[in-house]
Length: 117
Image (cartoon, rainbow, N blue to C red; front, side):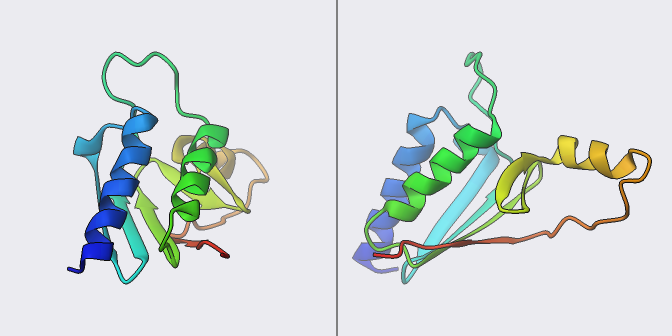
């Protein structure tokens, strides 16, 4: 692992800590500017504010702006990137079971464009 990858991992960790994300429920790594994140997005115990689509998108916008990020790939148990925005997996499952919702499949891994700079 290069020094740049270690620094990028540190910066990603800072974003999650700043947003009170439980680091015990996710894992992430970087390789040549490609960040891979897996697990479940939850706030740490004691934080009252729930995660929303807007907050999750804000976190990923911060990660994409980090120096050296080429792209971000995320796979979460409880959030999906669908139709251009982050959505709670429970909300998506609820809509899929509603009458007339169709049989759309939720992709397992979500490719999020990297920093354009």
